[in-house]
Amino acid sequence: MPAIKISDTLYSVGVKHPDLKVFDLLMPLMHGTTYNSFLITGEKNVVIDTVKLKFFGEFIENIKQVIDPSKIDYIVIQHNELDHAGSLLKLLELAPGAKIVISKAAENFLNNSFNSKLDFIKADDTTEIKLGPSQTLKFVSAPFLHWPDTMFTYYAEEKALFTCDAFGAHYCQKKGLYSGDMDRAEFEDDYFKQFKIYFEIIMRVYSTKVVSACEKIKSLPINLLLPSHGPLVNADIARHVKCYIDWSFSAPSAECKKAVIVYSSMYGSTMKMAYHIESLLKLRGVKTFVAEIPFAMSESQMADVIKEIAVSDALLIGSSTICSTVLKPIWDFLFFLATVELKGKTGGVFGSFGWDPQGLKIIELVLSNYKMKLIKDMYKIKFVPSEDKLLPAQEFVDRLVKSMNGEE
Ligand code: FEO
Image 1: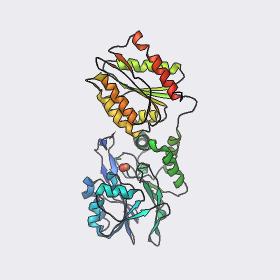
Image 2: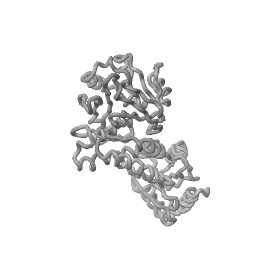
Image 3: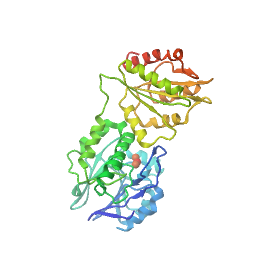
Image 4: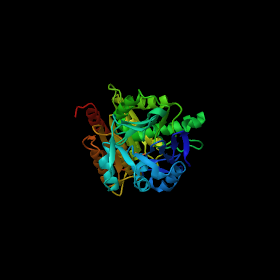
């Protein structure tokens, strides 16, 4: 993607990565992604975020289409993750006079990422950088959207808000650069679904921080919302912000407890246990959500389960045991749970086994590392469930409900 003029003093100089299938070894992608970077020109020239190092060649060519890189005065790094900060040192080689602008929280991260002692301008909500008589940069600290060091940058005269990963989507659109370039069907059916999935997987865990950041930007006039991934948002800006707020507030109701049950089952025994537990929970007035974890889980399946776990009181995980371990989908799912706030939620483990239930202990260990409130004794069945073997589920569910109600 070449440099693209957004206004007389603002350019997109980022790159597309349309064939990326998995982001950060975590998130499967259907539509690839983009690493957005921006160049502001004038008396002073500013680059806002860089790109992943492997795309440096294309990135620097984009900048060269507009200015000589040695004329860059400032490089703003809105957070330290390497998909956006990865080309910083290479860019500095060509722009040795550039000052690096970061949030206060970012210094330690950047020094440890690059193992270099760099000089920084540390920006906060009061910082203003005058680029010329009619060009001003302001900054909005937005911690934990989604890293502790995240900040937004506001180009006041253009009413352009650069939002780092917030309001982003892993979406490499087929045509154009802006959300407004898509027809309605692509916008709603493809892009906006990815926008929601991105929120569920990357941002939901920090919902309270999302609300605080949205509160901070609500008084800013915004003509362009410029995230670090996906389309540049020039259409439905208010809707994007409102969705972040609404989704952040979709918390569980206090009256009715909710449990999520996920499982993988080789021959259906663990699946029977999952649905038996579900029916007992329902009898106790607990809302339930049950999901089988498939061998290869899609991004939308993940997002659906994450959304449910985020608003639940309990998470139960079931797996068949094989060779003293759990099934691969459950291994993967346990890793993926790192993206959800589980601390304090009730956790339970169940599954069928042949001669060694050791695999279930792995689930217990991981859930306790995530600081869940584990109920005492897993629920396990040797080989195939029978009416007798299902009876202990009553006690398991009793302990579960007590824990959800804070009674044990
Ligand atoms: Fe897209 Fe947090 O980096």
